[in-house]
Image (cartoon, rainbow, N blue to C red):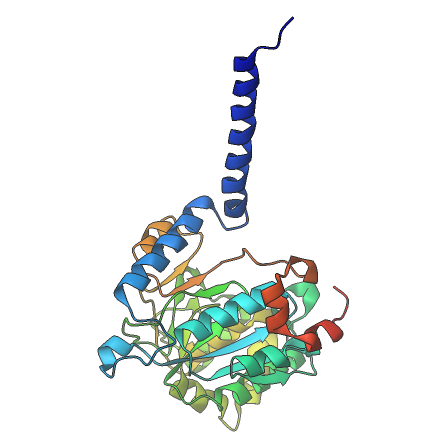
Length: 323
């Protein structure tokens, strides 16, 4: 029986179509979702159409320049996430102070820090217990992180600094006004337990006890320099841990904020990736900082591109510890 050319052609077209669909879908599945992936691309186009590139000298008009922001970043492994987070910040703020703290000296990113003009510190103590995520188990670990943050904040000259984390994506400079000592909060999460008791013991009438200060939130430098340099700041931490609860850095900083009558506000340029309106607002170029961008949470070297390996440097490769 002679072969049917139409059948062969149909199979070829079907096969090629499957390949095209696969190539289109696979990059999207590596991101938080296809909608967010497309939104990020659209947001980049909007920003490029409306702004000068961040590597050029920015206009002298303060309103156009936006808010001057530094960065503090405590990192632990996840090299691909590290490379993306610091580069996204440096693209938006090419000359701002950036303090990088390598948790327990896990990897050596000193070459990358030098490349982007960042202050690099290898912390000898584990600042967050791995089995508990980013929580500090007991007062000793909390004191270590407060000492590290105090040293970092004292090196910052900009009026604000952002809490960089592995899943923070700085999309553009912050141009919207910041009003709080912490900018960025979760109105559906409140401080409870021993931390609440600690706050109310010193400040019986806080306006509310929302939780803030997590990844991507922006801190006012002057306020935190004053608080972290108090002579009795370590006694305050011991008081906070009187109930022996386990707290993350956001819980610690939010507790200190409310205890010392600080202010916390939201600002429309910050968004979490799980918010339903995040793709639309990113696509319109409204978002300045995105939290929850977990596309590059690969911890091993195998996930790195050649460019990322070059950026991280030989010191990273030679100083690797086990996963």
